[in-house]
Length: 175
Image 1 (cartoon, helix red, strand yellow):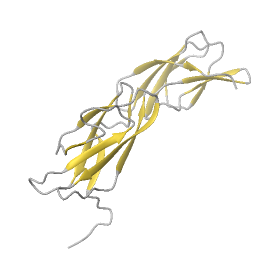
Image 2: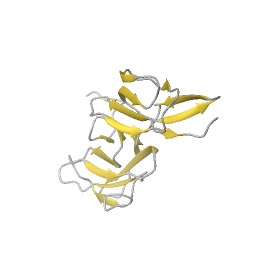
Image 3: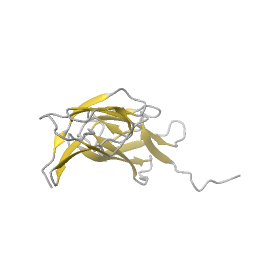
């Protein structure tokens, strides 16, 4: 018999390959090793809206992904899971980070305008409209120079393995 030190009785992963959402929902696939017929419960918490699936003990949904609604605040969030066995013993906490509503920032530093794309994880390619410079389907970068921008700068980005998304760059106070 061999024993793996990497074994964990439970865990959680995304129901889709990306670790971000720009629609406010995240799909997770919890996993917990049980015996057939064992009634395990799951407690889901974190940066999520309260629902019939969150912030309470519910039956463990074997082999079924769960769609959860995130709190409507931009930035990194976590989904936390805890499992409870029939005897009342609780598992360790399992956590999964995700980023809610990726966006681009337009910052002014010493009079120079820069478009920051570091809030967009899994960035594939980028196109920018509204800068004097032309940027069409460029490779992922974290910052782009943007001189003489129009009042609105639009960024169209393609997350890796996903359809393109178009967002308005947010103006950030000058430094």
